[in-house]
Image 1 (cartoon, rainbow, N blue to C red):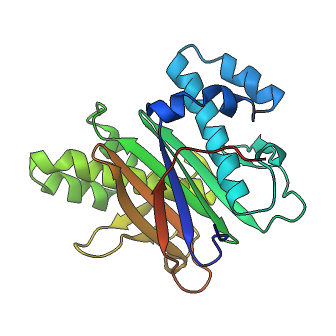
Image 2 (tube, rainbow, N blue to C red):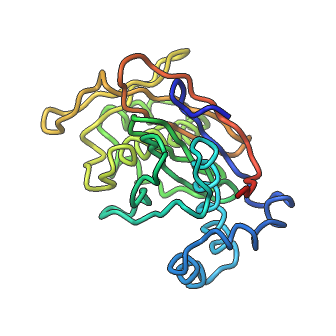
Length: 243
């Protein structure tokens, strides 16, 4: 598979797929000792499995785009809780990646030389009604409340995944005030972003896209533009470990 130089690649994994569950021990073998200990601290088996699959997904995906064995990728957790590369192995291009998970699905996005972020949410999970009022911009809240009641849950996840994908691509997490940037939804068009004056960023430098990787999962991808927009390819995979 060619490196994602002229496109952005997203791989998704269905956590409960039998083929994935059957490979858990193999995936666990890719983890560092510290990651194994971290995995064991999860109280629920499904949370431990999600962590193991996520790390295996990131390593096997990066190795698909570089002549590096999966075990050679070393991650660290940055100040905002995001797994990032500790260092680029010799021979690897300037790969950037971001990892996300929700109930039933794990996703990883990768590109070369462009900051990327991805968020996926299970739309069947319960919502706290004041989340939008607390975290969305006034324009987003007004748009949401103007919709028919039946349409509001899906649009909520549109906004939430977009906002999460942006802050993850920036690498700053919730240190970025969610109410100071606004997503604009237009039928038939890709989402765009606007910033409050106090949030210093260039709206024209961001590309966004949304997908339905399953009927109950909404996903958003953010890409920092370097020249023209890139195609975004989404592939459902069962990670394969090749040395």
